[in-house]
Image (cartoon, rainbow, N blue to C red; front, side, top):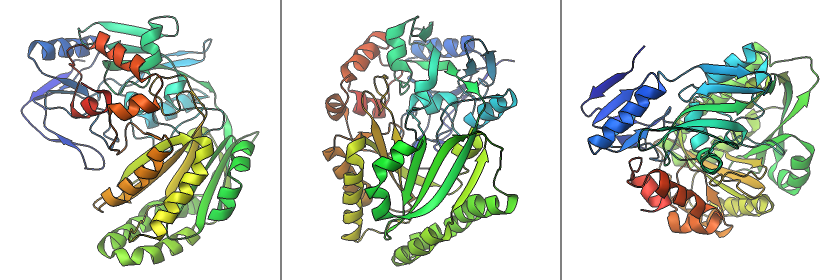
Length: 439
């Protein structure tokens, strides 16, 4: 099978609809060799190159007016190594397909985010993460990767091969080259018991350290304009599997989380004054439930209500104080917020531009329904996060620049020096990367 190239300016849009791009041509390579050819040809034509995933990023990381590389044909598992316990997968493979394929082989990733629409390379390149006391982001589970660099050469990177590139390229923002394949650590599939339970804001925040310490994966959602939260604890289980019943599962995951929530958000956008009342009803609609299933069926959930999101990683000990500041700001302002605020955690890792690089972290994520003005809310929250040395998620809305990142990432200079070496002409550059990484 060979790839396709289309020329002429069709418009590319991200999932949230807040980023658009009009590339000169779009290329869908069917192999690493075809992708390398496309990179070399773009350089000859004086065009920038960006690879795009599923568009789940809220920033313009992948936007270009040059050559847009679509990974639709770079999908599937290349190899499962049961001795090393790794899977090597093509970069364009959607996480949902990888999760299902691994489950059929009796395998699983150790941890993952709560959305599985992204491609493997898109998710890892922007630092997608779930929540975990001991297990980190998807990128931290990478054991090797294949990278097409600006001169069209193909680098294999691991702790043994090109280790300096490996240290940075696991979360590379598309700035170092185009990732074509990723080798991830896997383990035998296991069961998780999820315990979802409403809890008062004051109780969750007072007991946050204990809830974090006692659970392998703890997260909670606070509903603005209320004192109510919903908590979720996921822990490994000896079984047996006990998935949510079809009706109960549908009510929670489809009706309340997507259907009714969509209507509530639409009403809130049309009549903002109704939001606090809707929030009080929504926050009480979710009831406690416990179920046991394989990891991806517990970690991930469908997200059909479209939104715009900002998320900051803080030192874990700063999270509760910062969240209380967010609550105070919402309560004393005219802001009307229909989406819950999400709090998750991650252990420290060793990736240069990981939001958890070198420090135990907690994440605070704020959202607004698509089409609702979000700037005033996000700006107010961002002011709190940056006061705590927060690091914004690379794929979510933020206003920070290279000067800020040089302060909050001890290894920022290591990344930009590697970029200077691998892409001195900025073949993979765009406006977003110029802002966040410098010229």
